[in-house]
Image 1 (cartoon, protein in one colour):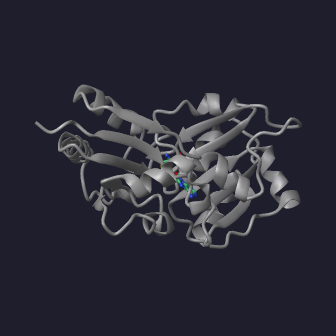
Image 2 (tube, rainbow, N blue to C red):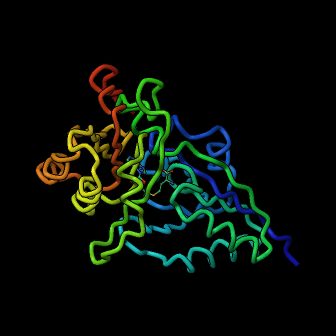
Length: 252
Ligand code: SAH
């Protein structure tokens, strides 16, 4: 009987290969199989050695190469073959990446696993855009929200009334298509229309692009500039620091 292998549920960080953890970088070299999404980006995926088996889980922006249960099944299967499996996900594996669900499946299947936290884009992309997500003078709280990408769903499941009153930084993942709706909800519940908003596309990558506006202008700006996923929306006074701190230019 083959000894069961092990799964590493690892984050790749936001895209800049220099922001991989030392552990994730080592696992890229050592794993027998890498099951990856597109989110880590080409520069990181190119680090996977030629000899390594590569499986594209490709759940990126609605492009379902493998369904979630198929991803879970393939990870379990490879581990049962005795392989060391690196499940590589963008950012941090437990921040809106369904990593928690994958971990639960591994427990259910009795597969040994370790989680390897990564630098979440929620912190890194604003940082490269010159926006500290907290600041003593203005924002002493921060909340991470998933903005959804399904315009057919009326209900977002989010308490926009509560969020509109939240006196801290809001970081919204996904939701580019829902930006107008999301801003509309915050305005409806009384958030200041002049609240600064940043859209950060492809943060920490050489083609990173930052769009700055306010709650009442940002969705029009996003349309004009054809803002696309992966992008984060940052709402709060800390966005003003972008003017002082400036954008970090990414070169690799
Ligand atoms: N686990 C990831 C998030 C997965 S959800 C993390 O911790 O970062 C996918 C969403 O993350 C994208 O739709 C986008 O909103 C955000 N995202 C991931 N990488 C990004 C990047 N480099 N720049 C901007 N947004 C990013």
